[in-house]
Image 1 (cartoon, helix red, strand yellow):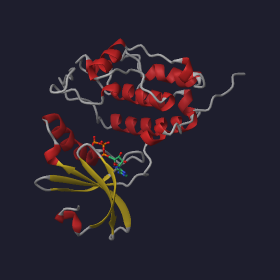
Image 2 (image 1 turned 60 degrees about the horizontal axis):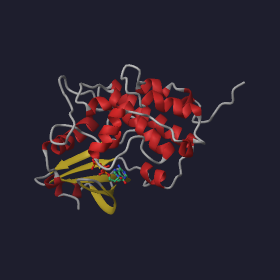
Image 3 (image 1 turned 120 degrees about the vertical axis):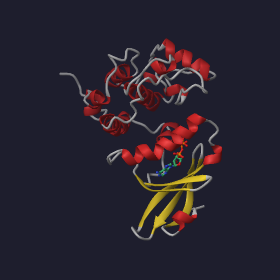
Length: 254
Ligand SMILES: Nc1ncnc2c1ncn2[C@@H]1O[C@H](COP(=O)(O)OP(=O)(O)OP(=O)(O)O)[C@@H](O)[C@H]1O
């Protein structure tokens, strides 16, 4: 339901998704004659301080960032006692997760998605978004500041060491692995086991899954999911890797 503040500007259409804290609907603006996504966040569902900070930061970061073709832009915002509503660019209905489940990702498609993700990430890094405040230390656990989904968290964050923007490249490397393999590189029965697997950091390419994956793709994965932060690629370096430059096509050797 649209709040009073947005009712005059947008006509509500159907619900298109649900997130952890609320609902996403399609809305229509008669002024611009175009459709947008409206993200309605129920503030009462925010159980802890970390959730509250993420919620407060999301619109702030989105509005600070110079526009980029691969980053959803925020167009309007309205806050009431219990809800926060964000008017966003409307994206395609099919998600990357849907495509992974449908085993619908060829290497060229995966390379194209990775190129778009890295271009957006390099843009954020150039704008100094995602660099932590000085002295910030993430630590293992939940109530003490570790933010992120266990599968995608880098070893330095799990260990509670100071970290930099290369944590995002590790996470994107895990996304690429999942795109190509359909399973994450480090797994376990619960968050603790996943973190332990991340810390061991043995990156494997089981042949039954990776038989048809190119050597170039595996080379890039090794450079993104790399425990040594100084050796790990930056987002700009990923964009210059041959697998990305060749669009996931394997170029035959002479
Ligand atoms: N801008 C958008 N355009 C179209 N669909 C969207 C848009 N934003 C979200 N959705 C849909 O709604 C779903 C939930 O999105 P949302 O961002 O609320 O959830 P989330 O990924 O769990 O994030 P959060 O952890 O911030 O709640 C998405 O999976 C997608 O299907």
